[in-house]
Image 1: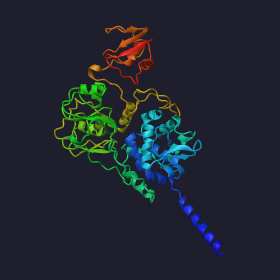
Image 2: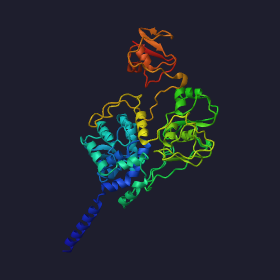
Image 3: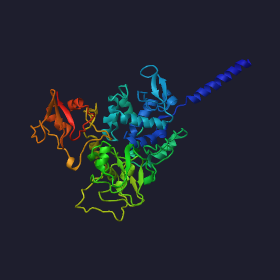
Image 4: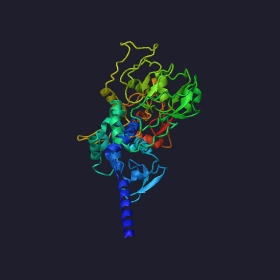
Length: 488
């Protein structure tokens, strides 16, 4: 009899333990726990926070899925050939498929952004506005992120039912963080927040504080000249070097195998003259946004100094802070690196304010800013045609050519500016250059100043692809004097 009672007590205790373990968090709790990660990732990578959270909800069943609980994998990302971290086997489309394992939810959110940002299949998505969650939802399905036919509708429903769009607006600087922080803190309750990501000293990425309720200003961390590493290092995910005053840009471009015009453009320099002072030189195109929210202007820092220190294009730094060319923020002012400032910062006393007739008026309205972003991201790509986007009637994306944020498009400056390609059939060229060279039945062309690969292809009635294949070219860059095979 006592044995029977003992067994009943044991069964009761086991049942209670399983019930406690099986307690589920709600969708609202999941969102309240991870929304700051999604906002931070939109600011860093451009993936809308609404889409990130909706995918997290769908892929993890609001954090209750077995894969998520065992691996911190919030987006169902499989191992692929490039993954070198921990893995786990899990039944999905097929039995015992390989999935990625993360130490924290923050790592999973970051890898999700990088997975979309760095995969050419999803490159077209980044031409969409950060508020256009419907195009993102349909685009993800069409690019092959999920096999479920109703995947877009599921994402859209989660976004609209839970008003996830507000988090995208916070990331874009169109809604105050305080507007959503208080209610989320109350909803999250006792749900354990993920550990913050550590600072990545190579990229300058700020850590994510999941317990914060607002985006706090970050003090400038610009190191003194002597503290910059030797050789190539990174700022805001872009490769840079530290160059001394008097450095020849022509020699530097030749040494790094970069076009001089690109080097000038990457660094927002007025000319290709030797450097007038010690400064950071970017070897890649800078980003449109910084790795943190703010930069506090120090001492005599100019707008250009801030743009170089934070790895952000100067035109976007000015646009985000309502600054006109020639205007310099006063010391101690906060310059927005993500989103847009609500007002122009206080200007330095010695700043040159352009006369009204000298400056081109800027339109700082949100609509104009969004339009400019779409136009910038819709420029022709250097890497080919994406598989899908803007949209047919009904919201289904169609093929477009897009430009990744870090694409190094060639826009030579000054004397190296190429002639625009003709819209119709190219007229017979009037050659002042040496005639094509023929050898063993093959025809060659020596590249002349101002010539482009497109123009040469038209000159010989070839396609750009043919010239790229025949000459083993990875992109569109050619150099003066380079001999190209143009006929077989």
